[in-house]
Length: 413
Ligand code: ATP
Ligand code: MG
Image (cartoon, rainbow, N blue to C red):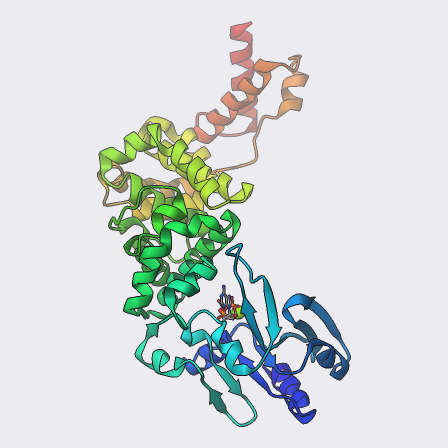
């Protein structure tokens, strides 16, 4: 904030108009602390560069200069008008202009405000303050046209409405419903990033975002599925500590497999196909798609909890993605398939964890080699068997473990 104010002061002293702009003004008026501060000015990029020592052109075509000052980096953008959106993604061109036109090119009225931090004056060309006060998200100008320029705004609308607990103004909401089907014209990366931002909010907000997604029928084009306005009890019950892939898995379950029987059928039948579809639709990273698949895989194995035996249960609890999976299990505990397991899970998991779920193995490869075994396929099986014996408590220390596996091997050869 200090750096941005200093930059504005320097620009104004040089005779320019300069304001705080966009998200930071909105956040300040809402009494929130902004994550970053953007400056907008009538100074041209070259003039900005000449006024500060440490600058870098970051979006030359758009007139954005990064100014480094007082250990901070501030984006200083020249007021601009954007025109032509033939690729539905970015404007064909920009013309440097004034604050009023710069406000008009922004997406929502609450994002179109300026503030002069030196006088405290709010500069409002789009009636954004009134909407902030009444809690309304409204497109600037003609909503159909604004969404048509850049379909990402459809998802941004949902994210902002959920984040601030705002209503979406009627004609804006109608335009979103009408234009949603064109969402696929923007890149899957942009869609995925926006959905991930929705999910990385606190629980009530991410729930609200997903409810908006379904109500406004953006779910279908976002996920490559038929639109489906279903209740979201799993997402609703999910802990605030759950990470993005866990939230995504919860949404998947609510849309595909909420009833107890569905869960079992879907896990063995449809889950893989749904995952492939969502991965493509949201352009998920390898890491995230692996996480979703591991988390759902753990849920699937939990359904057979008692058949796993102590060793199998401990192996499950030591999986990398167990913490996320456990949040999901907790959220599913009133679903029939999990409900009948829940008392056992709740009681046994802490006991298993107290015993240690992944102790160092007492018998390792070198021990088997010393017994004269040659490395081969059976080798790993023997190691697994003796580690299971250790986890199960069949053997109580290293000496017993060596003895136990030695006898097994002799009996088989
Ligand atoms: P956040 O706190 O999530 O960063 P923000 O409002 O700062 O919210 P940004 O994506 O950082 O959002 O964009 C900064 C500003 O640029 C917005 O407030 C808005 O005025 C404008 N803007 C950003 N993306 C678009 C877009 N796709 N269409 C129109 N205006 C946009
Ligand atoms: Mg921002």
